[in-house]
Length: 605
Image (tube, rainbow, N blue to C red; front, top):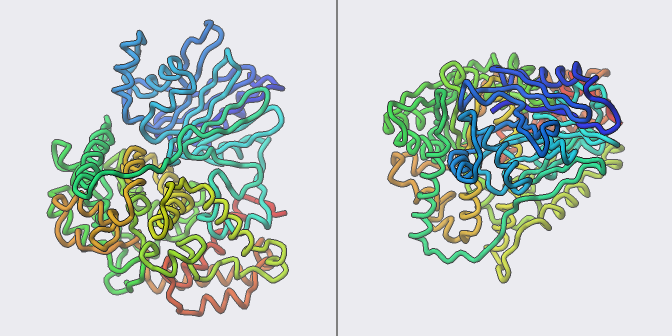
């Protein structure tokens, strides 16, 4: 994995700015505890923090190769994994390239030397990378097709800063943390953010499947990949078989590592299927981990998104698959203590207990493994969420995960609402995203609408989950791989008609059929259940106290923008909501946005 950063400026000598570049690189040390490197020239500087996963001894970065002339190198700083690097290495060797290491980094560098920017079309994996071509005086920023690996940038006249996390840019005095009232909708609900958008003024992410060229004319972002809708001609049996074959191939490639590898096993369909495939592909017992909360058997109550507890299913699945399973049981009282670490990992508002518990889970996992497999994206790819099956929500004319439920922006003070106009903002965002849906000519009715619903879910909601997984894992030097984000799998399943995806009348019916022989019957029958939440009364009291502190503290940056009576009324309500555990979970972003604004000294215009 790793952390990358850098700076291009055509109006100053960056050779004189090495201390700043080193500070930018050092800010990412948690992403790469195994090594650090900096490369500086007159107009470009690249930094790298390394988490060694493949070729432990080789693969140090930034990595340079000779360009057109010896004094015009091509330099790479790269984070992630290219899973087909062995096949690419063999092809490049046939073309005359010679390699000094066994790393995928060197393969990526030589792929650029051979094919130029078109090399991105040949990569399979999760990656964020930057290449400086001295002869062309051009920086190339590239992000993987689904945006598994993050890559932020700030463009300014004559230059650009970039990094795996905002903290790398904040380490440079040219970038300061500012936001505005207009960003409150995505501060309160990050799933509403359009691709590439962040709540920090002047900060963008490279959009998934895009590359950014930076030269003397400025920064120019273009797509190199997008979903394409085509007619699907396979029958149900062929479709099921093809999905299984793709999954098997993906897992074979994603279990390559020179360090200990494990799987995250929740006892749900997605994680159990991946664990079964990974266990079959490896010699020795595969390690697995799950998360639960002390006292959850007494405190838990079922919700639409969490109808049951993971723990019993995870234990049953581990026993059936014969893996070396470790249940990680967290004390709910420890969650508030982990929130500052989660915030420092994000540099953006945390998700409270959900970030904190994942951080603590990954801390335990990291004690025994360096790489983990996770089941993210199966729900977005195959159709697993409850809103896919609620007719009123599907046809509701807005983002399906929001439905007709309340919005946190309802809690804004009337004068702020009048300025921000959150209803108009949501409608504009919905229209923008809906216009991007790759449609199939002649498709209509439910099939056409479900294509829209699935596409919308592959945007904000998936990016929200992938960002969280990346930050909480990389803050501990843990690489998490997500096989369901393989673009070959997505390209195939995307064009499978909805009626085949749910041929059995259930969520993820196609995936269920493809792995039916791999998972125990109780898992195969289990309904979708989201990442665990704690319902401990003590934790609820702590969140309520934090919320009240925001509402009563005159120094709170949010104090003047909130309708305090309305917030308190919602906090006291017990109205069930589809996508959140309870009303305090719904209001939690208020606490976390306040915490972020204070901790990072973010000014709000």
